[in-house]
Image (cartoon, rainbow, N blue to C red; front, side, top):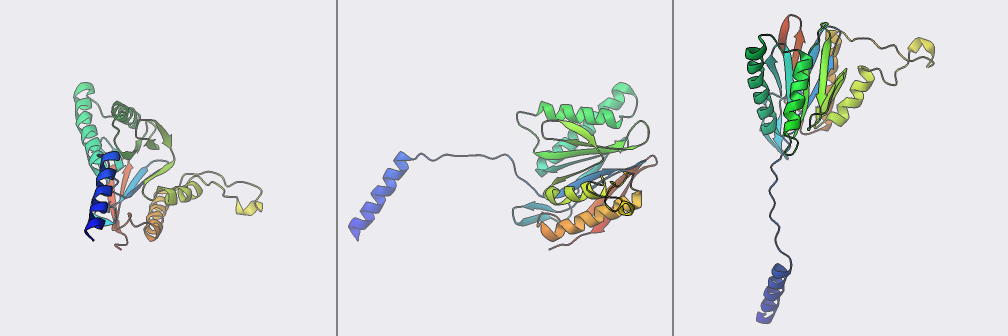
Amino acid sequence: MASKLTTMASEYGNEIQTQPIEHRFNPYSDNGGTILGISGEDFAVLAGDTRHTTGYSINSRYEPKVFDVGDNLLLTANGFAADGVQLVKVFKNQLQWYHFDHNKKMSSQSGARYIQHLLYNKRFFPYYVHTILAGLDEEGKGAIYSFDPVGSYEREQCRAGGAAASLIMPFLDNQVNFKNQMDPESNGSKKKELRFLSLDEVIQLVRDAFSSATERHIHVGDGLEILIVTKDGVRTEYFPLKKD
């Protein structure tokens, strides 16, 4: 028995000497949750669930992901929660400096360009988030801007991001962009004409999207916050989601 222990100890010792231990530090984490934005003819909607997770643990059942940052602009940064909070904080701070420097409100186009600069300046250590900005353009039409982690962005009709984006985005493509939808009166020979959805239709669509996502994704749930921006300002609607 003693010789066996010695052999095992010597083999373990040789393994340590020949295979050095590699120490790693990962500064990022994914805290779950899902966000989506939809633009209408005279409004824009930005929505997110309120669940905050780490792995299989729920850290908080109410952690807002969508923010009214001022000037009729809505901003969300979902992914690594600490980076999301920092990005929103920096944008709000710079928005105040924009007011001091230019003595006017920031437009949605200028907001999108500024977020591009924020993200690109951090490209070597990026904010680990999916960012969406919502507002109204100069003509009063709804505008949704979607960003990748290093600043590339585009204006879109709708966009989903976060844990359940792969579940929700095909649904939005079909229901908002009318992809693969045919005019029922044409017997499948003519595509359905594009049109803007009404605000009531969009809110119901958002609720359906998140209710469906909670059935299939454990990192989405608890509550749904919908922020709506119109020419009259910003308002918030809250709906409960599954808590299991």
